[in-house]
Each structure stands twice: as C-alpha cells, then as structure tokens.
Length: 304
Ligand SMILES: Nc1ncnc2c1ncn2[C@@H]1O[C@H](COP(=O)(O)OP(=O)(O)O)[C@@H](O)[C@H]1O
Ligand SMILES: [Mg+2]
Image 1 (cartoon, rainbow, N blue to C red):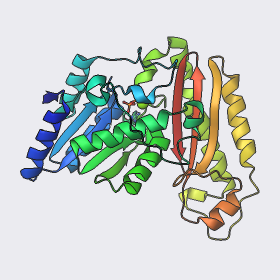
Image 2 (image 1 turned 30 degrees about the horizontal axis):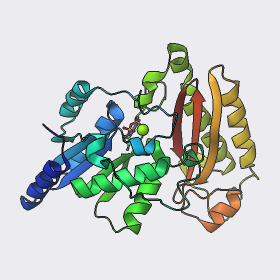
Image 3 (image 1 turned 120 degrees about the vertical axis):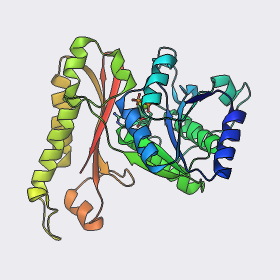
Image 4 (image 1 turned 135 degrees about the vertical axis):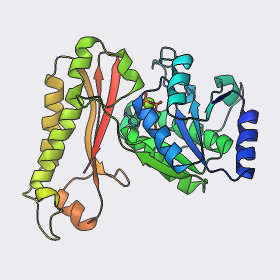
C-alpha cells in the first residue's frame, strides 16, 4: 500500500493503471476509518483490480463554528485499517494541495443541497460536490463507492455525476451499524458514555416509523401491497411528530434537526402515501433524521 500526497503523483498513477487496463475503484473519506469505510473498500476490492481510498478532511464542507479543527485525525491508525481492508493507494492531499490560496470554483446541485441536512448546514453540500468532483477528476476511477449513511449526499453526487457527464459509476453501500443499531461514524468518538448508550434512540425511532408505515401501507409478510390498495389513511405528519417527540424525550437529545419522510429517488417530500404510490408505484421511501446530542450531530436513515 502506498501513500500519495500530491495531485500530480495521483494522476500519474491513475494514468499508468489505466494503460495497464486495470479497473479502478475509489473510496473518498475524511479518515478516522471505521468498519463503514472498510465495507466500501471491501466492495471496491471485490469489483475492481485496484482500490484507491482518499483521506481528506475537506474544509469546504464545514461551516463556521463546526468541527473542522477538532475532527478526529489519526493517519497511522488509518493506514493500518486501510491496509487490512485491502486498499492499494491512500490519496492524502493537504488542504493547500487541494485548494491553494486562490481557489474559486464551487459546484451547486440545485434543489437538493438546501433541504434536510443542507438546511442546518448551509453550503455543506456545495463543499461536498466540489471536493468529490475534484477527487473524481484526480483519481479518475471506473467506480466510486459511497455509504447509504449519508443518503442525501449519495443523491446529490449521483445527480452531479449525471448532470456533468462524469465518468464513474456511483455505487452506494449499506449502512454498517454497531451491535445496538447506531450507524458507525467517525463523529461517534465525540459521544460521552451516557450519550453513546442513548444514541441507539435514533436508529430505533427510524425503525418504529418504518414499522408504522409498513403496517399502514398493508405491506404484509414483506409483500408490496397490490396495486390500488389504499393505506388506512395513515397520517405521515403524525408519524413524524411521534418520532420527534420520542427523540426529544430522551435525556441527552438536545435537538432534532429534522425527521423526514421523502421519495428515495429524488428526495421530494411525501405528503400522502396513497397519492405517492399511485403516482410512483415503484419508488422507495427514505425516512431520514438528524439529531444533536450535546455538541455532536448524528444522522441516520432507512429505506422502505
Ligand atoms: N456506517 C457506515 N456505513 C457505510 N458507509 C459509511 C458509514 N459511515 C460512513 N460511511 C461512508 O464513508 C464515506 C466517507 O464518510 P466519512 O465522512 O469519512 O465518515 P463518517 O461520516 O462516518 O464520519 C461516505 O461515503 C460515507 O457515507
Ligand atoms: Mg461523514
């Protein structure tokens, strides 16, 4: 496994691999690796000849007052985990290498970056789209791997790749969870023992909402309801309110940024399930939420 720090070297290696006709898989990360990241690398290793994993804490996606400075960083630990996961190259550029001092080009994916997480983190998704576009141009992979944990991010990246005719196929991998259901995340490190113990509430609130929707939707025995079947008039606002209240009842949840139920393909809001399913018989639903526990922001989602 090799550590690459410059854009030029990374481009040269990518070019060389292309000439050798190796297929290239790419896993962008901000480091402090965990099993979620390893699962993306493992999928890449399975599907591609060579796997590149980038570690870059991207200043452009942090807002003022967010945790850019204190974001956990541990290169030696990351190298160990990446090597175990079968990564061939770590791309590890500095902020100076990526943005220099006169950087000026940013990508906005319209309509998708200012809802859900974007509402609470203005500019965040422009920072994400911009750095991902740059990384995809530098690494030039055949496939790029993203986690479902950041669901809105996957929709935005897919849209950007399609709109800008970028090359790679985008592959979204399932959420890797701790045994109690908490989605793995580098930021879980911030949780104190009591917060950590309570953090599973986010997963459980999504499960409960999903169960209520499935029930009302007559999603019996795992079979999708026959066309034309009506739900029992389920009120999605009621489900969202119940989940939010339950989350806020928890002693360590300080804020529920949102708890939303949306079209899994395009993140459009769903007001009425019967109308939604008659208009989009094949579409999935995403239930997504972001909460704060003390200073830590946690996100999670579930697709039905
Ligand atoms: N628990 C998880 N399961 C699957 N993929 C994950 C998980 N956590 C993060 N990822 C994915 O890893 C990539 C890098 O995310 P990063 O921001 O470095 O990690 P985290 O969000 O855990 O701090 C993203 O595509 C993200 O969705
Ligand atoms: Mg993250």
